[in-house]
Length: 224
Image (cartoon, rainbow, N blue to C red):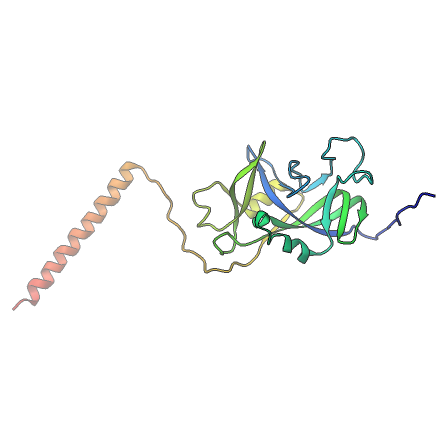
């Protein structure tokens, strides 16, 4: 006798939580996410179907395979995974489980998902993140990005949270956790043409000459 798993018929799709890395396509036209373990080599969109990472042609999730999307039931448990050294820069995703799924004690394995919210942790400096910046690594065709503040992202490729959400589509919401350090003053923009710099130097020299002349008048007036 073959035992069958109990079937569920929820009135609305289940909600789950997982961690992932945000990614941008090499041409900057698409945004998505990539997993941190088994499916790390297959970036996915905000609304996407699972694919077998072993290249098999069965539907996900198969009982004879461990393919499919994975999520946890608890947001706190997903957040706890970001304490691991290798996952410190990952974001926590709140997703809607779509299609068929297999329920486990701590989470689910399923066929289709919609990412609703991406929660971004503080910048590595401790300040609240307000954009995604190039993480310095990625996969073929995809650049990994991580949460960053304006000061730390000044010298790297970056994209605002609304800009990332617009590229990702499907009404994705990106939210940032509060930082643990005081906000840094904005860094001045680098660069400037040679004529501009010469003009600035001339202006500063003129101001300095004026102050010196005014100082000399005060000294002469105060001398007996």
